[in-house]
Image (cartoon, rainbow, N blue to C red; front, side, top):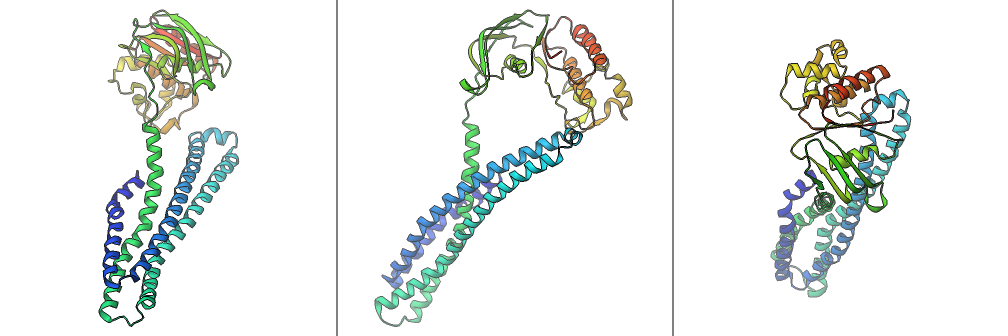
Amino acid sequence: CETVQNLINQLHTAWSAPLRIVVALSLLTLQVGWAAIAGMLVIILSIPLQRTLMGKMTAKVREAQKCTDERVRLSDEAFGNMQVVKLYAWEDSFRGATMVARKAELGKLYSFLNIRAVSNFLIGAIPIMVSMVTFLAWAAIYQKDMTPDVAFTTISLLSVLTFPLLMLPNVINNIAQATVALSRINELMVAEEMQAYVDDGEEGEVAMQDCTFSWGGENGFALRRIDFVLEPGTLTAVVGRTGSGKSSLLSAVLGDMPLGQGSMRLCRKSPVAYVPQEAYIFNATVRDNITFGEPYDEERFSRVVTCACLSRDLELLAAGALTEIGDKGVNLSGGQKQRVSIARALYHSHSSVFLFDDPLSALDAKVAREVHENAFLGMLKGKTRVLVTNR
């Protein structure tokens, strides 16, 4: 984190500046006596004010970062779904929502900069005020002229005070920002670990016994009293209306949904292939997206491409399977992305359990029927398959 790095670069200033101030004030006391106490009082009185300003800056930085998170989230959502935004002419809606978040962010940053400006002004004025008060106190206490040796030595000691006092605003500002950054990092690092709850079972078996899963604790969405056994090699369809928890059930099988009670069995020695609702496509070739780290096998690759009905699509692409795909599959249609995701699962045929989360939703009826017959009923015959669908 850049903020923390900036603070680390100034750590020596953080401890040396107060030390230099104390040493300079001690020597100043030996030089001008009680008159130095007046200068010390100026510094002491400025400390609570600086602490108050630092607290306000920390609060404003934390509020600004929350607004920044919201703005970045809206921007990422717009750019990540630009085709849909353009198709439905939602540009003005997203622009309006983003500008509202940006104005809120700028408002917090404006308040922070105003407070920091006041802090910088005070720190810059303190050395002048200390010098002025010290000389006035000398004249009031000793009622005599200050000799040149005392005057120039006092000015030198006061100049020694200037550098640490001028550096303190930057240090205080970085401490305020680093405190917020470290608190956010700490929240992530001390977050409750998700406990592994999947017991080892027979290869290809998926079993739940009186399981309750929930998102967000007791008040969140929950799947209650789930009890079933999927025998190895079977095809199971999960059908239900939107929002009924079909995807959450697959998340529970994967071990991603917190378990409240019950037990679950799944073979840990064999990997699980998963096709999500929204296909994950990264910036690489079509072949790399399908092999996904596995060694390239031409025969197996050709077979999965045929089963996923991608042969015709690869013929239309300029470089075939070696065509570069943009990030998030921007140069592929929704159906093509979904079939690439299906082909990826088929290519990892050593998996014993295959989970499909509504994989046919972006396909037309004819292609969906072919994928179902060639892939789910054909190539994956003998594997445990769980198919979530609205059809």
